[in-house]
Image (cartoon, rainbow, N blue to C red; front, side):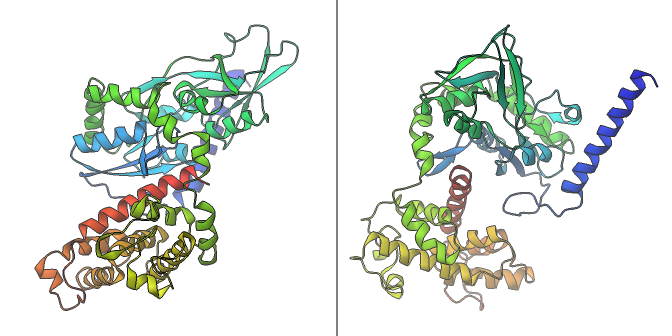
Length: 453
């Protein structure tokens, strides 16, 4: 058999294996669109985006998720007068496979175009660029007599070439299956490896917090940072590409690049330091301790506390709510808490209250939806959420199965037709405030889940 025929057969086998792998991963599942298990809605007014976690693209700053691509996606939706649902994925393999599904309108991930199957992907106009660099500890030298191992992050967006770093040294590339660039930075700092590859933009973000690490040199060509677009949306894709082309000419875009890709970025320095990634607040240990008996995620509780007080302990709110959890006096008494109770006692009581609310919504099948409703109930009171659910049951034929359905009627409780409905017990309520509250809590919680393991 000729060599060319053998190569062709190998290629066919690889294609078949790839298709089978994709089918098993996605084709036989009921995977929904977001981490919140919201069904994919191919509507003209909503953009569904998957954002692959990248330290300068998504992080928490002063209690709110921000980042280069996160801000860009938000700005695009605003300029195009559309809603946007952003799901953040920290696993490189999952993010890459999502590029080949119909789950999203766009996937914001840097993809290595040298891979065989990326030729079938639909890429946007470039929104920025970067290039690969070699990172080591400051006291590490390139060895000219033995092999130097370079660890490559999973789904690294470009091929690396080490000729320009050292002509005489021997190199071996170690490709990670699941470890991200952030993971490899930690391993390098802990002396568990000697060399890693990173893209320059990410290195600019991380290096200030690793004083023992340095850039050795450039190890590849520039690569465009692009979004993977859903080929089933040609009109939307044209709009996205036109927007990218126009936005890159604006002062807002220039400011965005300076804010996140500058070596002097104060946003990065004050919010993504190694120390700040270790804890959300000084009360982490207390929150974890009192969440454990109820199997509540301490990061969800922390997000509610930030929303209420930003971890301040001496605030007094409208109606007399007090302390770090802003419990109302009558509610606090149910848990043995007063305004003279210690901060730990207030946190314990607040967590008990959150859990009591959470239990009321166990009939909602999806965990994320239950947390949305729990957060709204913490703000509005469970009575108004019960009213919204009763209205939802009455008008939507028992579709009390997602926070979107419930929040629709929480919002409508400000209208006479609905707050006077016979199924409503608690009367008028301006629900949009609590909806905004819950969305901010959950957005921060999503960011906390990525940053704080």
